[in-house]
Length: 83
Image 1 (spheres, rainbow, N blue to C red):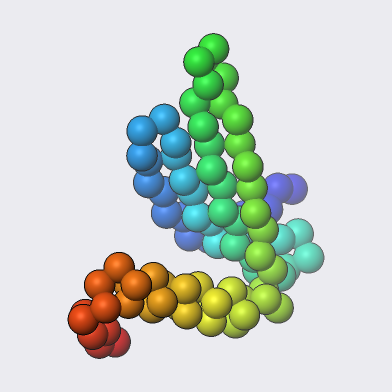
Image 2 (image 1 turned 60 degrees about the horizontal axis):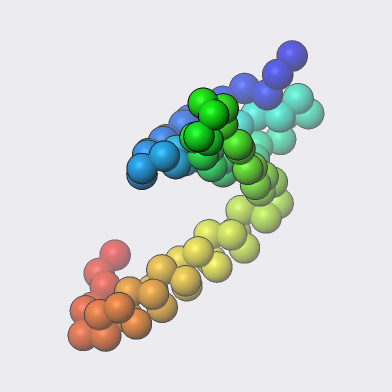
């Protein structure tokens, strides 16, 4: 049995497609799978995947939030963020 996709989001930019999947593994643990798919000149696709498992979600979310806040302040230092 393959891992079950519980929720999925995707977006495309040019010849790249990105997929963000929240999955249930065979051992009933959850993980997030980030996939980038690039269309090649010969009609094939190359794919890269990154899996983040449930025990690392808190660290991923904290690091990603910090990165986005820092990036936002660097790009527009006068903008304030309200959550």
